[in-house]
Image (cartoon, rainbow, N blue to C red; front, top):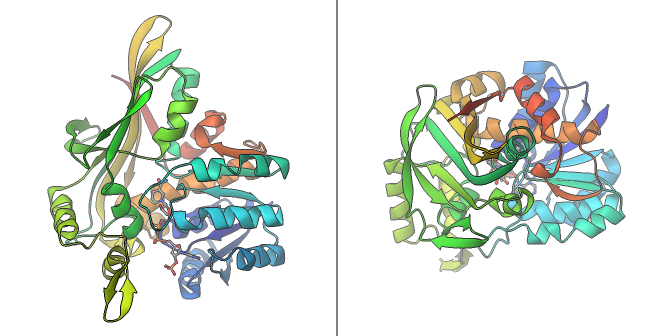
Length: 396
Ligand code: NDP
């Protein structure tokens, strides 16, 4: 019986709240707080209608540590679940330390003025969380998140040594919009326009943005799609925690239409993150672009098709070389029927709920700051099957 404080009433936040309400034996009290109160109220109304569970709502500016700490002191949650934006990670970790509450998020910190994400800022909290006997679980979404758990599970049950890892993220869905992103547009475009990076023989190799691609034939009728090499945050912790890795890469599918729009937006300066003067005021072009693009939460009723996200491992077991593919397929339409959101929000929100459940049940409990692959993958893998993200494993 626990009280969870969920921060961020966006696409992912909505799924987390619906899924926590479905597991009310663990989450007996749920509070949703965000910058815009009506968004919290709309989600609470949907949860009430679908599950009968009452969700408390609060307004908070999560950039303001004192304000969040005051909210935490007043409502006394057992866990803060951060599904606002990466910019809020550090202020929320500070508020948790100040008030003595455990922490979980789905994306690592990045400073607003530099498009660069890294774990170093959050890993720097390890000692302080450990000394306060508190736990922070980082990156409990799908990728990062489930992909890290797949790695720990493959390592535990299927390999003596994993030599190569390819994480492949395919969205074979279509929302019918000219251009829209499936999660927060500002964070999404910052990520995709960065230089590519992969790990090989103990060092990082850089590539020009989206300059490397491969065709991958996805299972269960999805078929071949073009995937582009990108840097993605889980690579940073996995190359440290999965011993013996010789190469680790991350790939994502993009349609020609998406890439053409992105190229035009970049060429005209709309993806810039430095402020420009406009009619006497300073605006950041990418933030303005976000304001005119569809909100990820609005894509739920429009999106059709499936996602397929998984890991391909090559390595050795009992002296024999083997190759394994572990993946999940998630339907946009089924996610929408169940919780009113498309599959990108769904595949992020379900693991965030499961991560919180692991912590609150005491199955994953260790003072300090941790990444997902540092815990026993088995209870998490079991919960994925139970709560809507069943996985498949095939030997290739
Ligand atoms: P949205 O933009 O839909 O939602 C973000 C929410 O956070 C909004 O409701 C926003 O409020 C709120 N928020 C922003 N700033 C503050 C603040 N200072 N104080 C309080 N609330 C704030 O994004 P998504 O739901 O798509 O994404 C949420 C998170 O999930 C992101 O960090 C994203 O990177 C991560 N993610 C992780 C994935 C994974 O697999 N690991 C995959 C996809 C996303 P307002 O509505 O007022 O703007």
